[in-house]
Length: 69
Length: 442
Image 1: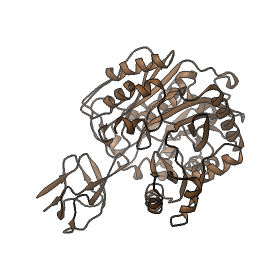
Image 2: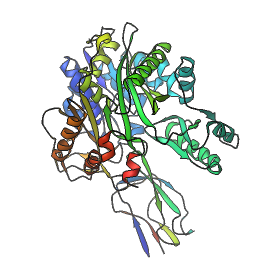
Image 3: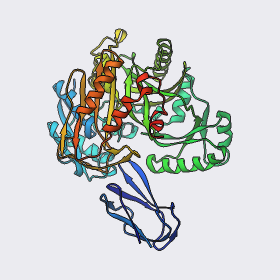
């Protein structure tokens, strides 16, 4: 299992993939917004996505965004 | 002069405007969101009014919340700072309808230049050179405009600003997708998906001129600022005079910008942005507000631009003689951002200790102190380090020492990157262009 965490405090602007979707490494999963900047979160590995966040949610640095199994 | 002023902004620019207002004996009113309840600008003002939740859309971008604050405080005038509602003609009108004076360009001017397509047309009509290109709509027909301009092209949001909604397209095959993506982003950020395509000049310098339209109708042009040091199309360092502008070119730029500003009856402060390539220049856009980097102009002219904005808005004569403005020495501004400079990603955090540098020619426009959080809600600017010297070399030496003397702990900042820029041989030689940062990070 690969857990992907937020690099910085941010708001979850958009969730691009659906829960349970199969993704390839490099696919955009979620788009964060912090300090007026959009920050795409891309899959580090291929696998099945499990979302830990909802659109509009505020997350802190190092909080989990998705896990990929 | 006004007896009271509400500053419809936060952070360093709110603090900077409040300082001048206080020096002029004006009663000052700050506004703040939940995240900013204990902010420095709140502490500096004589009175502070809560305007809503932390998200900017519900507070600093909310016209109803601002108008309520104006009415309840009885503010005689409103200064919008930069960003947020500063270039919103609807807000300017709402301020006037609430019985206060808007400290900025007239709402009609904000509208006329706020759309980059319209600004381009009106400046061309005034004889100001503009870049090859024009407006496009998403779809294959955009290709014809791009082909006429010639690749590479810059695809940009007509309503854009702050570097958001801009894309360089090198390859003809990518154009249609880039126009669609930029249009969608512009719709989200600015509520307007209109797009302009212009020729992209890779080796150009970004040079802007400071304009001040006076109460008597005259237009003062207060020299240029070179803003070519950028990352993600956002400025990192600005200087005046520009090392890439000859006296002859400066003369032509000043004359063209003055003609353009007079053509639209420009009033109050504004910036005319241009691209300079060799001895040629083209007009890019007008920023109808006070600019982040206005302090470098203040340092070489000795003019307090905020005080002059207030004088224009109050229908008073200027505090300087517009026909004989002398430029003294050289000034550099360095933007201290809460960001990771390896990839230029924002890094919200909390300042644990904060010590500004001091010394001859050093000015810091800050907005935060130890204990303050730089939150994800707003932009990452922590402070502006402004340095003045007798010449460019002295200004750079002072800036370099000041960067080392600026201590901000607990927060990731770009101070190390600013030192890198100041040490770069191309920057030192003054021969840099807008590609400097990407070469440093290449």
